[in-house]
Picture 1 (cartoon, rainbow, N blue to C red):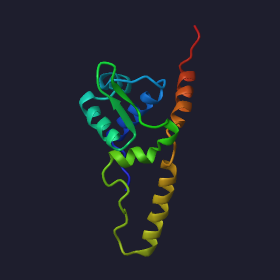
Picture 2 (cartoon, rainbow, N blue to C red):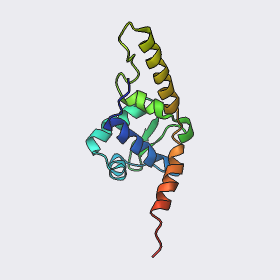
Picture 3 (tube, rainbow, N blue to C red):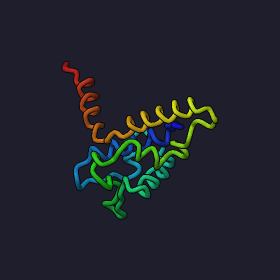
Length: 137
């Protein structure tokens, strides 16, 4: 049913970094990899998939790089996971037991509701993280 791999975790980390940019700013793959603490070669593949999926945009050239293709509040966690994971939401219950089928259908729907979270929520988590590291000496 649902497995969130490093691929989705790195994809989310890249989107988070791009979501912190001002409107006209872009980041190169190398910069995203450093900021997201992700392997650059693996991240290249992830960014291409997210671009094909309509989440990211890119510009070539010296001033080029990656940006979000749409506002962060319009990107949903489920969208990113669906783009990056294979068979994420396949039917999990392969039995003829009707009770189990109903059970897993309800659980899958509950999970889908949780994953329908806008990634703009990342900004609130960034603010919380910044407060945790705001020590005065």
